[in-house]
Image 1 (cartoon, rainbow over the protein chains, first blue to last red):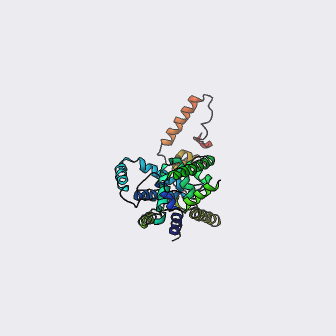
Image 2: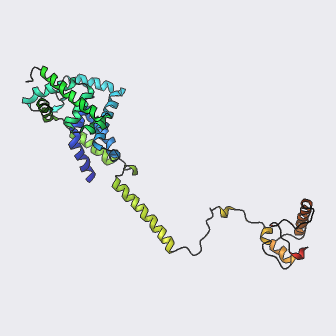
Image 3: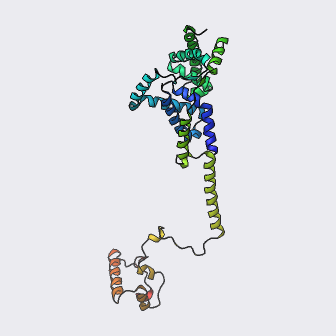
Length: 168
Length: 148
């Protein structure tokens, strides 16, 4: 079916970045998957109405993630998941080989230290491969603001990584 | 952009974020396949097809009615013209003069003596309103000459 191929292509191209973006607010991997699923189901029927569907999809992810984060009835689950995260190692943001694990952990740690506004721009730019105008449209900011946040995010990330003991 | 920034960007881009699980993809597939198709959710191409079909149907109906008009158009009972009350017998009767008073009485189907009473009443009203003895009000009753 053509429609099935279409949404599969969308998720193949943007799924990992969407999941990574959702995990900026939601620590648990299954909960982030739920948010991506909900946001994508909202996005799909109305994708033609958006000026830029890709920017709209990322905006849907942020909206649903914040909505999920605010909902009270999920707060307990979130706290339980956060407690469980410390024990499980399947919650990392990135896939990686064993020899790259130290580097990956350092980058994940440095990412977590960035501000939320910098992190979302960085995720959209690096892993979502969005342009600055698309990021600006998705976050309702100006393209110059998006670009400056990106530059500051890279600078801060480099500073954080320089302090890491296993970053050369 | 400095080389350090480019190196860092390349290093970040080399990291692969986790992708959605097959279970999550299956749930999305189920939800999208079972979602009810609203007309507002149609793609622009499908909306255009629906609009083209509707427009061609209307054009077809218009051409058919203009090529083959109905021979005796039956009045629509819902129209305003047909909701008017039927004209009174006097109005109907006064449209054309009658040869005799009996024919006139028969046409308006008034009982014997009722028409005379009506005429007298109208004449009294007319005399009261118009003492100069002008003819009866036009449109209500137009009396033929033999009635005077």
